[in-house]
Length: 216
Image 1 (cartoon, one colour):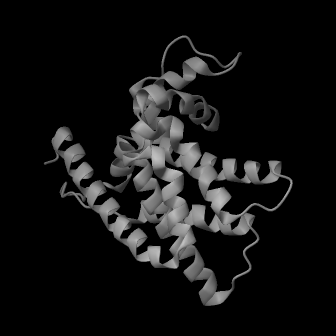
Image 2 (cartoon, rainbow, N blue to C red):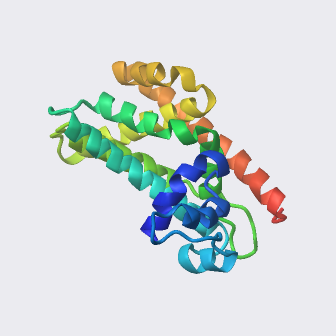
């Protein structure tokens, strides 16, 4: 499955984090694994899950690749990078698929209950940001312990989430915005406010997705 997911990532630029990208991935496998026809819908469901689960598998693979990218960039520098550099690298990793991230995040946060009542699940987005914050701290040699360890990662996760939201809406000034959040502790409240905006944006997008699917 990892081969298919890796082959699907370049297709996200044109097809988004969709079952279509997964279906076409098999056409782009290196020989001798290349297929002449796309994967069937039933094959995608069998491999990656039914419905949105397949799309979420592709998005989560993208998240994992983003963490790996941070590690590789840190190793290539020949020195210990700063937190700022690592967060910047992760944001730049988003750039090729930026047009599709808002829809993907909204889809990931949408968790209809058995009665098809739309709910916003903040945990996937929170886990995503915390993993990035934790990796940035680890790669930069952060030595905080106990409560300081949690506080440091929580604040960086909030800042990263704010920067990622800003990137979706104003990509040209993303790195400057990240710098402003990192440089001043007084900006942390602003980052938390931005996280609230992010959640609101996800909720609105989630409702639109559920309406288009007929769930609402």
